[in-house]
Length: 253
Image 1 (cartoon, rainbow, N blue to C red):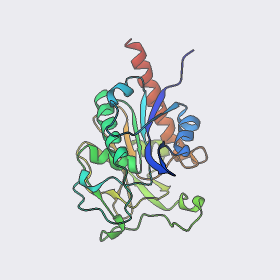
Image 2 (cartoon, rainbow, N blue to C red; image 1 turned 180 degrees about the horizontal axis):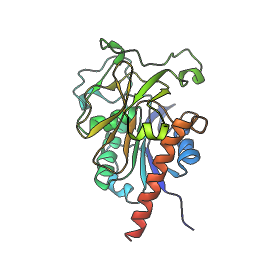
Image 3 (tube, rainbow, N blue to C red; image 1 turned 135 degrees about the vertical axis):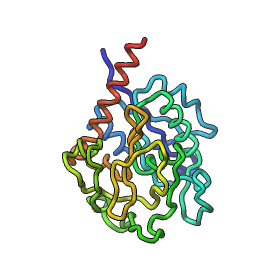
């Protein structure tokens, strides 16, 4: 029987009680199953990282998820961290290793929120550690006191680049998206090209011009993905890219 494409998700390294766990948000796993129609594989984030290239030989795509933690600032010349800024060094190490191996294989990559920031930093870009503290930029954080449905509900519009992937999938040049992030793109990596911007000019999505399918978005399209046509279209396109990669991989055997 022909199996569904397999997509890897790097996990977060989280302490719960007395022990450390490798965890992934169920909403990302569910979006892969329901919208991309692929099989999720959870990849444990350990230190030192496990051999990324070995894992990716059997995968057809890579999803870099959002997370509670932020990338440690030394990875992008972001200065010192500050009290209360959550970090996950194991996630940093594994995500960067997986990304480099995936890009070398031209593996389809969809990067969401923290994942988009990992993609940008991995390719030589930088971040604003605190977007809300940058003059001229809006506060893109959610209200921590609001209900989850409100936090992940439409927060602002983004301008989609005419002729880009997102505008084609959406069928228009503007879209409403959620906004649940404190960090954001400062200097876009040279290998990436803009796909969407917020009203304040912050880059909200970008793709690689050197790979078959490498796309990063700052918002969370996994949230209620099957109920939101624009979000669903993003995951469908990613799933299709994974199926094409799988077929190419099988044909080469």
